[in-house]
Image (cartoon, one colour):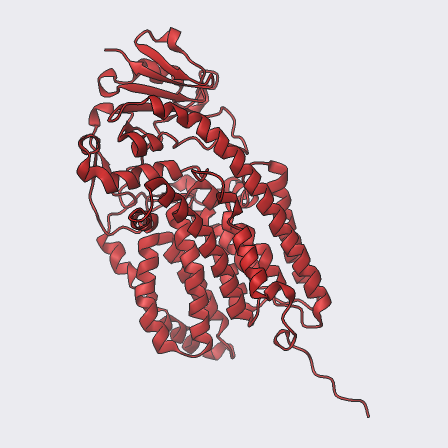
Amino acid sequence: MQPVSHPISANDLPNGWWERRSVVFLLVLLGLAPLAWPALPPLVDLPGHMGRWHVQMAIGASPDLSRYYAFTWAPVGNLGMDVLVPLLAVLLPFELAAKVGVMLIPLLTMVGMLYVARTAHGRIPPTALAALPFAYAWPFQFGFVNFVLAQGLALCAFGLWLQLGRDRRLVLRASLFAPIACLLWFAHSFGWALFCVMAAGAELARIHGGWRTWGLQLGKAALQGMPLALPSLLMIASPSGTRAAPDDWFNWIAKGQWFLSMLRDRWLAVDIASIVIVLLILYVGVRTPNLRFTHTLGIPAVLCFLAFILLPRLAFGGAYVDMRILPATMTLALLAMQPPNDGSRLASRLAVASVAFFVAHTAATTMSFALRSDEQQRELVAINHIPRGAAVLSLVARPCAQRWSDMRRDHLPGIAIVRRDAFTNEQWALEGQQLLQIRHLAAAPYLTNPSQSVSSAACPDRGANLTVALRTFPRVAFTHVWTIGFAPVVHRMPDLELIWTNRTSALYQVRR
């Protein structure tokens, strides 16, 4: 008589080497390497955010800042780092506090990824390690720091949501997640919305039975999700933002670019190859009989992808709304892959491949950030020649053609606010998104972002250009002009005195 064989589940297998605490700790620590060297994390929007945080903290003691800006607290869904960095600055110098705050974002994101994977599968599947590079996805590189902080918190909260749901501690979960949902919304409203999509997908995955019981099951899921709707009351009280424009819906060209740009950094070949590797891993998961995708994470991934398709680029005062959710979609898809249930050989091979991908991607990001940091520091030397309280017209070069690798200097002048209590025209002032208001109205039309972004005369189809800006800006409103990415042009404007240049950028004093 033949013995009866029983299928082996993933939980019955011994833990793999990649699940050891020491290995997980080292991998997460390695994931912070790109941010270890740069004094200023080279993220596109970060210097502008730092300028706003400095105004928020110092305006009461700075007559210069109070002359140029106003700051009023209000309940808006975009306050994550605006609260965290000032808290860190109580113990640390401001610029170091900003760097530590930024480093906490990928740390939270990676920990959240592994927590979600372990809660959903009972262990860490080897392919979960391939999701770690998405901690440095394009929204992070762009410097959407409040959103990616909220995203990292949302992943950690999602792991807790799954754990309490698995343990059937639903009353405790409801009582905890009413305040957690509000915390996520205050960090960033899109981060809260992302969590709601993930939680809804996980609850849908719990639905079982025939179509006749679906109404009851959906009712139960909606009832359990009611505590997450509490921030809707906050949205009623907060200022409204910009609505979506018709051209922003179903822009397939832009959505295709966002898909290819998910891991965009510096080198086109490296970044596209990274996406190809991720797609290959998912393809292996689909085609290999011993690999499956758990519905608990697979359905949230599908819902996030549908949101990416349906969302516009601009909505509620925020830009790139659809792009922000795409990396989370790929992350959930990778985390949804269950560990192989037929032995450790396939699992070990997948772990080796995933770790190799993570290490290679981290090495490329570390090298890229070091190069970008050097590029930024060469430009920031100009601030040493700006007097305290100056009003600086910032004119940053915008290339005629879109390049894969940008110089990440659009908001560098924001550091002049931090170090010199200066006025610069690169700050955002969107209702419902920022609490900063511009008082220096004499600077119009060079008041806010994107007035600092100009092109050369060689590409007139790109909007404002340097020559027009230098000829028409209001002289009475500015004491200095800082051109970044343009060779000195002092011979064209006799009322501008060149006081610093590095040959590719220049600082001028306005003669009156």
